[in-house]
Image 1 (cartoon, rainbow, N blue to C red):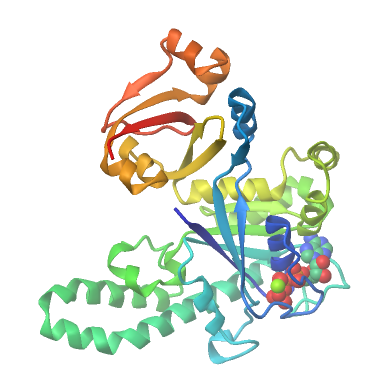
Image 2 (tube, rainbow, N blue to C red):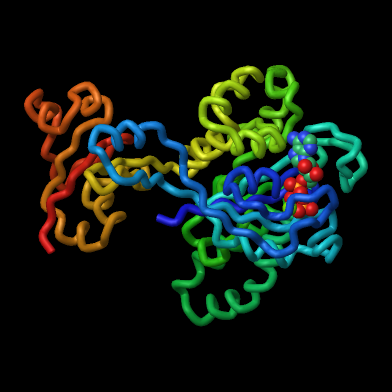
Length: 357
Ligand SMILES: Nc1ncnc2c1ncn2[C@@H]1O[C@H](COP(=O)(O)OP(=O)(O)OP(=O)(O)O)[C@@H](O)[C@H]1O
Ligand SMILES: [Mg+2]
């Protein structure tokens, strides 16, 4: 499952700095608006400490984490839908994304230019939201004449047309499709940006990481969507450090985990995803599935043949396996279960599939 998250925000708010920290890629992050023009795609391993434990237990040659890909695009300014700044055509690069991560500048640094002249998280959120809504309205306007014609000829097109017209009304009222809770199914082919789940990243100053009052105020601006607070500049320093040094630096700032670890976790939660694990001498690996996926569906993520030929799965929870110390001991303790086609996977299940090919 290729999970993809598109990063949006005003110019110069720290999108590329965050993206670089995420991907350890040295994409140009620069103190001038519109430093990024072409989109950059980076694949990020989702941090999961369980994998290292499994790797030791099974003496695995390598560790393969679940991945999320991030797409870094140019900044959007007020009026982008009318061609201001770089316009909004580049939003097409995130049409296929599963979720959108909006980066909002909170940090104060007079050396870093703000396109609207002042640090204003609430105003910036509104600007971006408005531009995404206008972009979606443009998408709808473009397809509407064709759809109206089709619906006159084919009755079965009418529900789709009705759903799209309703989405247009919601957007004209200034609400995103996602926030309005509209059924995404009939709208899917339009790839509306505001139909995607949103995650908000507030790019704060180091001191603000422990300012709970400020964080509560910012969180309230985007609730019920999830908010992550991080200092993108610190994140880019953390990735240069060893794990121990990074933890020490984080703890000195009152943090337990890095912002990008939080972002990966929140991304998974927002999209209703979880991971299960496989382990052997070759690799210890995490696989991404929907919450509620059944054992055959989980097998299908490894290979479609595994799903088709699914017979059964031997499942032991990560904690039971660690407590037992080996699969053999977990079996002896009755902790390794044989599960069939109906089994609903749990996060952290360590699995071996049996299948016919
Ligand atoms: N938390 C922070 N504190 C201080 N400076 C920061 C912080 N985050 C980013 N910056 C600085 O802000 C500037 C702009 O960052 P960056 O290039 O990542 O922005 P961007 O959103 O990608 O801009 P564009 O839309 O122009 O591509 C850089 O100089 C970066 O070092
Ligand atoms: Mg950039």
